[in-house]
View 1 (cartoon, rainbow, N blue to C red):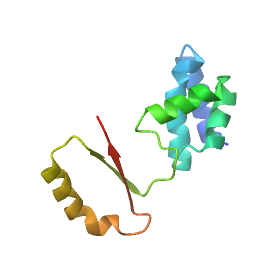
View 2 (cartoon, one colour):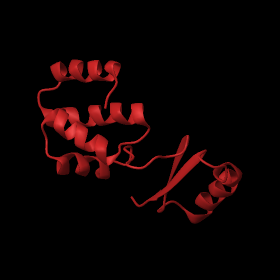
View 3 (cartoon, helix red, strand yellow):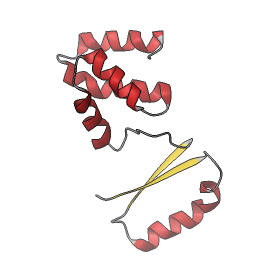
Length: 112
């Protein structure tokens, strides 16, 4: 699943991290950089690669907002729903034209 360059990166990281759990985020980040997102198959691959349960990997992917389990656009915007309505709406108005271009932007609302 990982290309040769990224497999070498993971092997190098194994020497720098004490446990498989500590390797999860760096390896998921490498997968996401390579694939653009982290699919269920990729999560299963990482689980097998690190010898961890699939549920652990799934939990990490779904917990961290920087990790995407679905393809995103070329650019990704997160809008926090607790920000003031006027600033959020103004931002969306400014970006509205760009957001309508197919596969150019992905937008997500997050509660913090």
